[in-house]
Length: 191
Image (cartoon, rainbow, N blue to C red):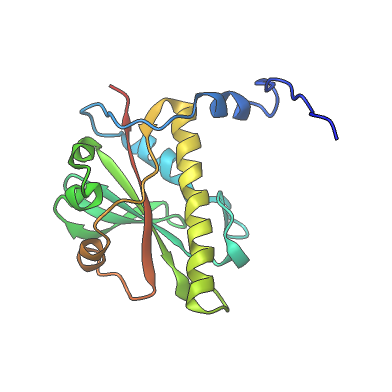
């Protein structure tokens, strides 16, 4: 077998996806400014919103269409649960939980928004907990990648993270034993 030399990516192909992929990067510095409601709406829709309302399907696929991923939106004044069907944020708890999401990386608290991705493994129709947790991890990774690509396409700063104080967040968000916080993305405007 011979080595196969590949061409440079055609950034014009696939509308703007190729150009978005070429600028996607992990960024950890955020402007000191809240996201507008429109920008937050677009971000959440891109993450896991309804793109086919007639069937209930979302922008991110999920294993067995279980739609196991919930997005908790942490802002300086409180944390909300994203409801993609109603396109609204439902209050979960008051107060600033960003320090618990930032965990050991306290400098991350400067992000105006944290998206916490939680997989509720009880939504999978079968499989033992190990299989369900693995499927949930795949689904969460896809949602996080949607966030990364959206942010790259509009010029926002973000970075996918697994670090967070999971036990404290379980308590503060009043999660059920079947709900697993797996990843988070801080998001903000670039400085």
